[in-house]
Image (cartoon, rainbow, N blue to C red):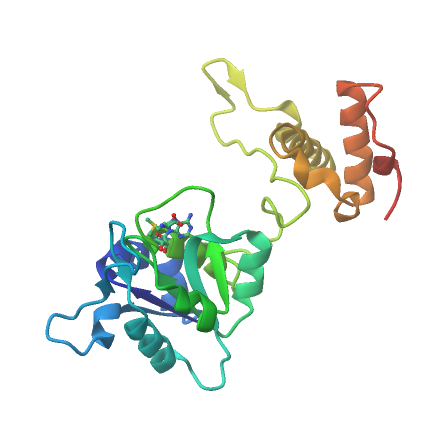
Length: 257
Ligand code: SAM
């Protein structure tokens, strides 16, 4: 796949591209990444990319012309790219969106700055607006890195093991299980005995139960669709709920999809 980023601060991405999964995936040619300076699509001597907002108010707004020109020249004819405007006003980026984008042949990410981007980009150029959360960043660059990292790790063979991404939080209908490493006891805190048995079935059962317990505690909203859980998870969840509050056992946890 191809990822193109439009930014007025291309150097932001130097560290991201030099390390970890982005570097590896590029070296293995699993992804092509282009970081593009929006100023390359300006035609004036001062390479102006922003202007004052109509109607007054403080701050500057990114102009539409360089963004339209850049996207039009980066669009590969056959690719029908996803053109994403990063904005706190967009739909919330999540694992499902990452999976969907990882199946595209080209994704173009537009990073805003200052007061934001001329609204005509959202209305007539972007195919979607994405937010990485309900808070305001100073620019779209950190958001673009978040999206790229989440997408790249879902590309075929980008992670060392083909199953690594499969069982992570949000891929299944629950959070991932807790993990431990050596030493087996640290400051008197021991690793759960089940993980030291060498019995694969026992380890697996412990992990499922622990994952569900953690999901119940921090993200119970993920468990509202029992169809996303298999029979074993539903049984374990029912047991956990019964142990926590005998009277508060939801009927749907007992039913198969
Ligand atoms: N005035 C805008 C508002 O209140 O909605 C905020 C503009 S923000 C300071 C500047 C740029 O940072 C945005 O155009 C966007 O590209 C990026 N940005 C800020 N927060 C973001 C978020 N939560 N998700 C994605 N992009 C964000």
